[in-house]
Length: 131
Image 1 (cartoon, rainbow, N blue to C red):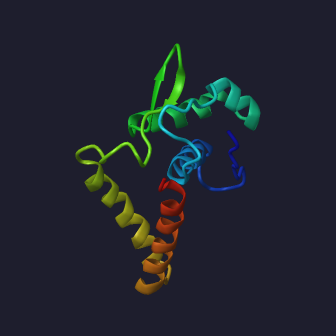
Image 2 (spheres, rainbow, N blue to C red):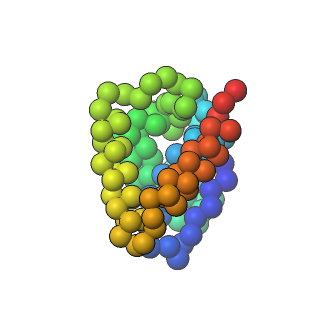
C-alpha cells in the first residue's frame, strides 16, 4: 500500500494515514476484505513510530472502516459497495462537513465555488467506484 504523507503539514501524521486509507477506499484502491500492512510494517515503511500507525488504525476501526484482530491484522470492513451507511453516520458526518464548509466560507470561497469543488471531488470517487 502506497501512502503519501506530508511530514511538514500541520495535520497530525495519524490523521494523514487515516485520510489516505479512507481516500483509497473511496477511490476503489482498497475494497472490503483487503488487508492493510501491520502497524510495525507500515511504520517502518513510512519511517515513523508504529504507535502513530496504531492510532490511525484505531480511529479507522472506531469509524467502522476496518476490523482488527490478532490473526488477520487490519482488514477493510466496508467500502462503497458494502451497502447503506450505519444508522447515525450521516448525522455525525454532517457535523464534520459543517465545520469544513464553514472554514471555506470564512476564508472567502463563495457558494458556487464550494459546490463546484464538492461536485468535482464526488465525481472523481463515483468514476472509480462504480463497477
